[in-house]
Length: 501
Image (cartoon, rainbow, N blue to C red; front, side, top):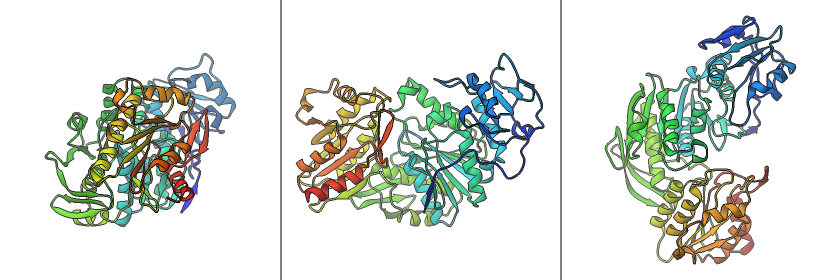
């Protein structure tokens, strides 16, 4: 399997004129010629190449309009902006639009030949379950004989080629470049996580989706969206943009499911474990070896664990059928698929201490994982939870996360989880804020995550369960702007071996 970095400045093989790039964009004003070739599209002036289009986007912290002159010096031959600079230069074309970020999405789609309209692009949104759902769809459709692409938190991939990624949803230029490369590799289906940030920042503008899936909506990203209603509107905004030819599929057991679809023109469908939906499922049993489920009258076993994964499986099954696949074949192939990395991933020691590594970094995700463990444990098995909260992110969820960990665990170690530019001890103090005194006996504070994992293993008895929550598939700790290698699963394996447990 190939793994390499991605260069979004890759050019098309044929010449693209600026006039073609501006198709379906309604400029307020144009200065200069549009019958000129464009070599690429950039919104970061540092990356501009000769003959390219520079898009000046007004961001939260940086305004691209302040870098127009630099972009021209770097070789930009055209500028897409919301306001013209005080002085324009001869030989440079200026295009004024109302919304530069949205226009960039359309321009990028035009530049790369509208790739999203030429394959089946499915978007997955929600607070939890996006990565699992998108990854399961990717693996399922490959098993069904299709050539597939994946744009996710874990990785961007088409077939066996993996590209490193820094954002869950890339910018619109990178997305279109990736989709164009997929088409060139004869990919027919692409499954993509769509974050609330991506919707608000217009990263999905200009894309043609064949379907959208809503998993659930719980507390997260309020540092960015400021209110839960604003967060909801961002998710809903994705469904509002769907064409009539697409399907809209929602979790009918989430109280926001129906509201998400309220204004969409896409075909409306739902899936449910508790209510009535277009597609319905029932959990027959749940254990460390996997789920047994009934989905639309078909009974079988799956390798995934927990109620939250039952929703993921049901959502994936529903989407596949909506895409025209045979339900019986979908059900059969799903039964053999492994969970994505870092999602309820188990590491078992020689004395049967069960280590579970999970990406749960929101209150609801942590609650789901711990409730699943509660239902699975037997006899005197204790639950030890290691959890932290990321720096420079949603402050409100910190005490909620600690409270959930205490309520559903026998012991809790609060530790670091990507403190970024924050003091990790400030984060730990906020996690303990207003925590009921009844939980004080359960808690240990160990800022060093490696030491936290070691101490959890040292105090665990045979067959106890250690949940290491928050980082999942991530293989780094981000501290003061530097990413240092750190892998929860790797650390657990190392400590099990060193301590001989």
